[in-house]
Length: 398
Image (cartoon, rainbow, N blue to C red; front, side):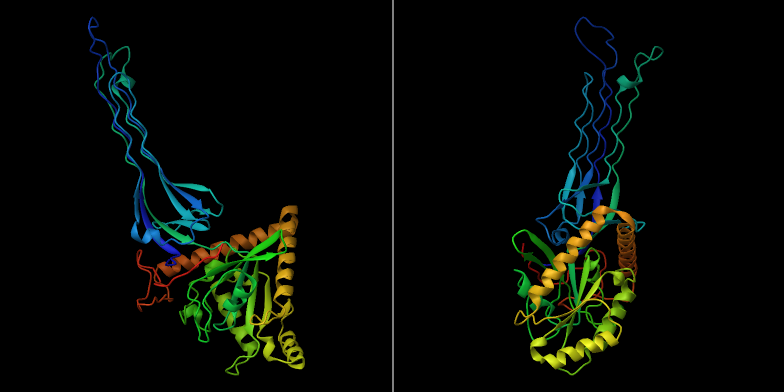
């Protein structure tokens, strides 16, 4: 299935039913008085998060949704039926933005969560509503009100605990294959990963977390080089970033320089996202002896890296189990800290809000004609209206 993470849709709530003009006409009952009923309210348009969905591709083929109108009222004080709501299923993790003013309407981050995005029109009133002591045969009714119309931007941000970050061919796809059931494409050329991948890492029998792999970044990504920073929004919900580096690049490039370049691109995209806990993971250590490994770690320490540094070989599995267990423990401690409240929890919530605001601002600037361009397999650039399918496929493993 094709992976689409941003689409525009149009929603139209149902119109309210008109009120009825009617008078009672029964045998032996002259001048029975008004008995026109009210119309029914129009149906609402509601978005509902569903975990079974993982792409917005269906909205490419059906971008317009309309709720049912309310029925008109009838004689004998009969009220019209309310229109049926239009309930639209979206993936969990969908951010909803009003295209007209650029304001977020809601974030559907939990299974079953609903968001009303267009309110149905109010019902019209029948002539019964207007009778009085001075007007015993009113001929006045009101019409139903039109339902709200909106153009919405749906932006999918994957729900993952840990995000993989790094240059193309750093071994991110190999690592996610080694530690989870995900099977992304692996090849000996850059940009084999063109869309985000998710894998569930299980630690023992009762612990697990979700690992996300996004397409590799290169220097100049903020200006659209490579795949640009198009998919960095999928790291917005993560708690830990794993910065994967090739410890023995075949082209002889400097891993420390590669790290600096990617950190610079991340900071340009979102300074707040760059403040997330970031662990350095040196991959392909099977190509280095013990002395070379120690020397490489010393270089990174001397270069200012004071956080965790892990040495792994995704190809052989060396060090991957230790890394995954360390991540699981860190995530558990973070969750406990959030549940206890206090300054640390407040700081994390403030960081979450700052990341969400910066990622949203980046997306709106992108839609408004920013410098970045996303290129699909047909070579077409940009994301005008709902022509933002990348023409590539993604497979998710539960």
